[in-house]
Length: 122
Image 1 (spheres, rainbow, N blue to C red):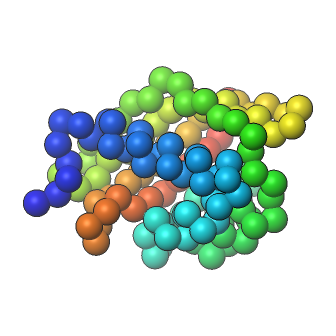
Image 2 (image 1 turned 90 degrees about the vertical axis):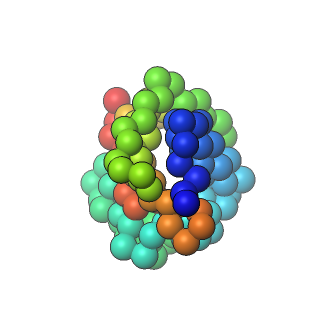
């Protein structure tokens, strides 16, 4: 039995906040190396990163100072997967990024794993 119930939107939003909090704490690479599937990809402006490349990218970038998620929506993909789509605002010093995001989650090995993550400047 999976953890998917009618609370899927809340569950996936919770998982996404865990990732953002890890990024703010400077542990983004560690968090996603642990929570991404082996063949997961992160699609960011100008790059497509696998799990190892993503960990390196997080290690070389300063953490964000704050973030906000807006307009979250969930697309259900069967009984063990879903896509969380939202708009994000993140700040680092004087820089503010406005992004459109989607994260595809799979319930695997007893927990939620990131299979794909995409972010596009808004």
